[in-house]
Length: 414
Image (cartoon, rainbow, N blue to C red):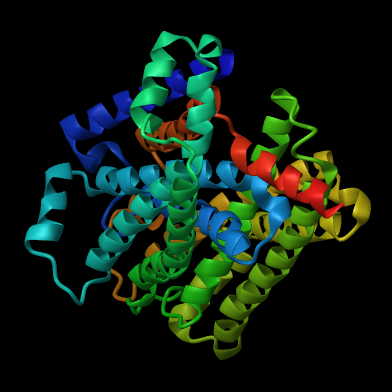
């Protein structure tokens, strides 16, 4: 209750800050003519990145018949759904005038990456919700059966959502086919959502964004932060819900191997992203790179690289580092480093426009979010965590039917 109360309070402060933004306009933020995106778009890219974990854990692992991942599929999907919901909301918040979202549909241009981003985010959200809901149906039947443990209100919710499920062979066949179809569909959509999001940056000529590497760079980073978020959630749910029997050290060992591979992959794309323009050192790129390597953003840049990638690799390369607690620490480091990395993708480039204005106020050359921006950003983070928390309170976070089936199959095999 204390945890939920804290999240609600942070969310309410964020709502109040958004009310002030609606009333007085974007002037309450510190975004100006240079930095016109700021922390909102940083959060958007961060949430979109975390949401990719649903397609990694659920879709790719299911299609590859990776049985050990069954206990963590629902954790991955609820993270994906909650993150993509708030990624959509933060874009509307960034617009300043939310009613103008209609213009994307009324006056949308097919050649605009923004229109494609809206389409692909909506598609990804629908598929992710279905991938969360369809495997939940057999568990809803179990929850309805044990109604004395859930109470009248929750039992009504369970009946509304799953009373049509009878658990027949035909229903299971339809369910399996539906899940397989959704898994096949979500993978290209997931790749599209990160590629199209990268196009919002890469289709400009701004230094730091004018890169053909951005699509793969975004996808590899999204896989990493999503896997890091799942590791953190695995540890928390295992600890507080006493799930040691289901989320075992083997799961942390397997996820540790995956995470270290993803760290190395993302580190490679980071080296590629910065080393190529550093070799060329065009005048437009020079100020941007120097700002990252040795200038105003250097502390944040090297923190994101070392804490978000290098230190987790060092921890996870060793077998002892792939135990639950070290894995949790590495996961937290990856998630924190990933947020700062998204901030660094957005802000430094905007401070170095390709056609700088003359005699602008000094404030335009620097950007630090106002308290309203911080409150809204933190409120969106709290919203994601609140959805995950409430879901875990209402529904089983471990797939009951799938876990039972898997245990039976293992027993028969032995």
